[in-house]
Amino acid sequence: MVLTTCPDDAVAARIARDLVEAGLAACVSRLGPVHSTYRWQGGIQDEPEVLLVIKTVSTRYSELEMRLKSLHPYDVPEIIALAVTRGSTDYLGWLRATVGI
Image (cartoon, rainbow, N blue to C red):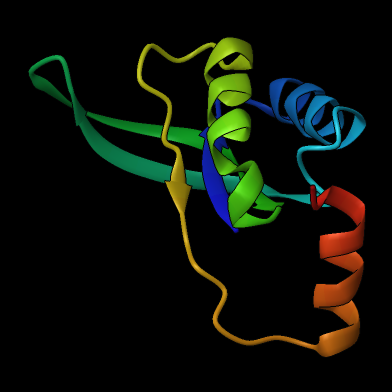
């Protein structure tokens, strides 16, 4: 599972659709708005964003990261991968069949 934040729903929707169409993600959930407080260029920012929860497999991570960087409008986009250690056998089977190599 990979997390990233986007500046608005239009960008989030475009990225989500691209990742699924490219076969890099089986599903992308858009959550938001969320409010992110972070340090950037010497100041504290507090901005609304849309969180993407990207479901993929570890073997597709490198390609997914490169694609996200090319699509994302941020200079340094949040791209965080979380290992899924357990889950529904049916769901994980669908996930692997959808994006697995």
